[in-house]
Image (tube, rainbow, N blue to C red; front, side):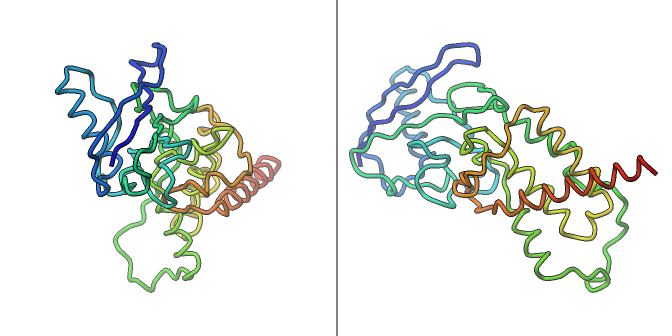
Length: 253
């Protein structure tokens, strides 16, 4: 397969960036998009040119580091698929493929296709954990959890923090990410003890990082490679409202 690649190149956050065009021939349809970029970089290096910087790690759809904007879609045209799992057979022979980084104030660009997503880590540090002493491993049936809640908690926990939800949102909102990380604990008994502090701190940190408000276009759910439901945003909003009401009552008392 032959392709024409239009890739965003930018030396650093201060430099002016632009799209550069690269013809690429004899691409195997079984290559992933990242393997295709490896193939391109090999040719660039051999010709004495600087390779394209992009982020990757596991290449198994687990780590969330590979996120790219491909032909106007986060992670490309295939649904429920990360960039590293996107294969070139999803494209048409002779097609022009446009590849660019996430575009969000809270994800400042580092170089070419690499952005700094440490803002997600700061949201997690604000409350995405259970800090109370839960003791040793309990008997499996000593703390009953409904099947519905355990399934929903697991579904929320499948979020890999890739940032596709932010890239898909016209307001660069991180509410789907934050909601998933809040919901995975809010739905199980172990997470209820710190529920109020968790939602307040994580939402506050999300706002401090410069993410926008939810635009209610469902774009985040549609482009999420793990299919995280926006129902979790509604759950987060209920948790936040409850925390504020409980906090107000406690202050008033």
